[in-house]
Image 1 (tube, rainbow, N blue to C red):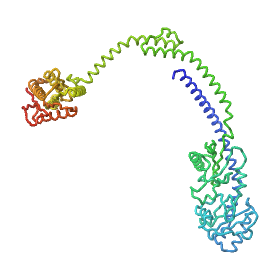
Image 2 (tube, rainbow, N blue to C red):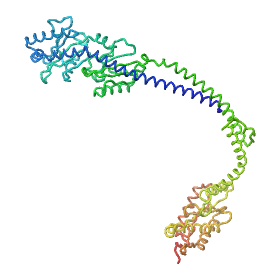
Image 3 (spheres, one colour):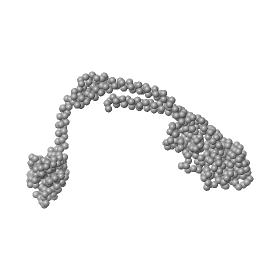
Image 4 (cartoon, helix red, strand yellow):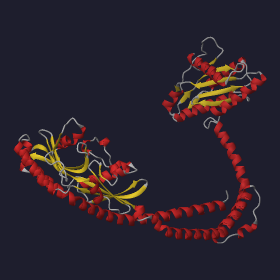
Length: 581
């Protein structure tokens, strides 16, 4: 793809990215405004709802506490079988019934499990005793759970299956010192409470109440209410998990509830997702009843972002126009001259001459770029030939370095391997043989250890020179590694291989002196193993047999030649390296 279409794509991408950045900036600004406004609104709404919620409940709580702390009630709870106490207690409860908002009461006695109730219609006058609580019955579990918890006050929404009613119950423990005698309280009409507290009809605002575990106690949608939370396991409760789309939102709200419980703040707000829509949740704690109020503000309803659409449209149109003008300018001043430069570079790459008028294209920095390119093209043409010559020379030098041992100037292992493999291919065609001589300088490690590596290197050079002078012109020698040398004898037969191997031993014996810096003379010797190739024998086998012959020479006392064809062990004499003063 050419530069011009790429630039157009980049321009479009920049427009899109700028539009997104602008939209994000406007949205972020709007969110900041909404957040500041919504936080204040949520705080005021939550505190207002707290006041409206507590106003009717606190009065009922106070009356319920008075009923539970009544001397007649406590005396009756101690001795529930006493008829006189029962009559006094019922009269006491009836007097309270007239003052309760819902004009109903209930009392449950722990000692005998008797449950008393009367409603606003005085329906149970004379038969206030309704039934006996049974700890084995699930419907009565709430009573014994509250007794076990020992909380003086508890508020929950629960259906009374025996009476067939569902109310917002205010439960207060009847105590005699540290002893719990029962529970007394009253019930508020659930529908009326929801209508007066959480159903204000304000669009985009939803209020609900939850307990410490997040179980929903009051909600305009009664199907979400967790009735009888006190007697349920945590996994059975209907909690705020039903409201929020994401687990992270639930954790954030629960953390806010914990912070409010610790009285760290009055109101905490969190952005949450409800039914796929973004809401601001305002959370406030009601310590008087142990509940939390959560106010959910639907931001799309209260402050829709569509109101910012006009700003974004003007911004997008302005941005598009600016980029179109920029595109026209760059095409004329940059892209078209660069296109000509690209064609000129292709001509230089193919070795052709460049149009002399190229240096007149463009303006400013672009024109200077064109002129510099013209000078560069001329320099490239002049240096190309020199460069190709130098590359060829360096290639040959590198080839030589890769195959020649720098110390002895013989072939190295790589060069010798390639040479042997080439000869193996040749002798397969011609049905001839080659031979290998493997030389090892005797006791070379002692020379290095005693006289140093410099003397050791000198010994290797002497050995290489002896090998070079002894071999035939068409034989090839190499330093195979360390103090080992490998000689390729070609062409060869068993007699020729034995002759050259023996002659090498003799020549090394005759010319085996190396003089140290201190004037000491070191006498050298070498062990030599030879092997004549067999038909179709691979390189690994050749080397293995030559190596075995070398070991045979060492076993024979060193300073001798042994062939892989030898079937006896012997020595031509052994002279170990020594120092002659």
